[in-house]
Image 1 (spheres, chains in turn orange, cyan):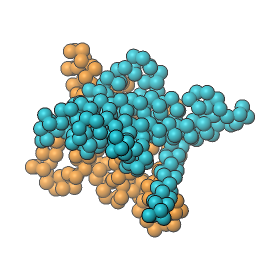
Image 2 (tube, chains in turn orange, green; image 1 turned 180 degrees about the horizontal axis):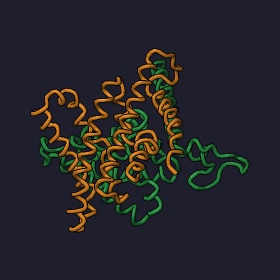
Image 3 (cartoon, helix red, strand yellow; image 1 turned 180 degrees about the vertical axis):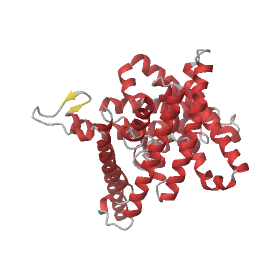
Image 4 (cartoon, chains in turn cyan, brown; image 1 turned 90 degrees about the horizontal axis):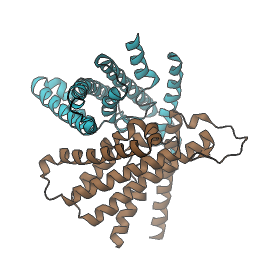
Length: 191
Length: 205
C-alpha cells in the first residue's frame, strides 16, 4: 500500500514536469513529435532506475560509514555521468537496434535534472532501497507521460490558429499551464 | 573597457539565459513563487557561475580538452556544494523552501554552457564580466517573475504586504500552472520587445 502511494504521488500528484518544473529543457526541446518523446521518456526511465540502484547503496554503504556525506553532489553527478557513458558503450556494442533508437538521447540525459533530483530525494526522504526504486520508476514514468501529452498537443497545434503573440515557445508554456491545471485535480487522490 | 561592458550587457539583455537562450528553466520556474526565493536562487547561481568560470579560465591551458567535461563538472560541483552548505548553515528557511534546487545548480545548463562556450577560451577579465552579466541577467528575470507571481498570488512583495487589504489573492499564480503561464507571457513579451528593437534599429540605419 505504501509503495503504491509513493508510486502514484510521484507519477501524478507531484508530476515531475508539471508540478515540480524539473527536466524542462528536454520537455521543451524534445517534444517535436510523439515518437521522439517516447524514446526520450524510456531512455530517462532506464537511466533513472539504474542511477537509483547505483547511488543508493553507494550513499548508505560508502559515504555514510566514511562520513563523507558532503561529497554527495560530486559523487552522484559523476556516477550518473559515467553510468550514462557505460550504458552508451554497452548498447552500441550489444544492442545496436536499441542504440539507434535511444543513442542520441543518452548524452543529453547526463544533464537531465530529474535524474539527479530523484537520487537526492531518495536520500532526503529516507526511502529504503525498494521504495527508492519504486519512487524512481514513478517519477520517470510521470516524465514520460508529460512528454507524450505535450508532444500530442504540439501535433495538433501545428494545424490550429495560435494567436500571433503566442506563436513559438510561449504557447508551449501556456499549454503546459493548462495541462498542469488538469493535473491539480489529482491532488485529491491521496489523503 | 567598452568591450567588457558589451560582454556584460550581452548576458543581461541580448543573450539573456532565460528569455533568449531558454536554458536553465527548471529552477527559474520552481523557486519563483516568492521574491526572496528568487533573489536567493539568483545570487547562489551567480556565485557558482562566477567562481567556476574564474577557476576554469585561470586553468584553461592546463586542462586537456579530451577530459574537459568531467573536470568542469567536478569544479562546478565543488562550488555548488559550498553554496549548498553555506545556505543550510546561515539561511535554513530559504534553503528548506528551495529544497533540491540548490544542489541542482550543478546540472544547470547555463553554467555548463558558459563554461564550455566562453570561459574555457577567454582570459580572466572578460570572463568575470561575462559571468556577472549572465548571473545578473538570470537574477533579474527570476526576480521579475517572482514579483509578478507573489504580488498577484499572495498580495505581498518579499513578504511585505503591498496590495490593499480588500485584495483577494489569486492562489493560481503561486501554484505550478501559474508559473508556466507567467513564464509563457514573459517570453511572449520579450519576443515583442526584441522585434520592436530590431525594427527601430533598421529604421535608424
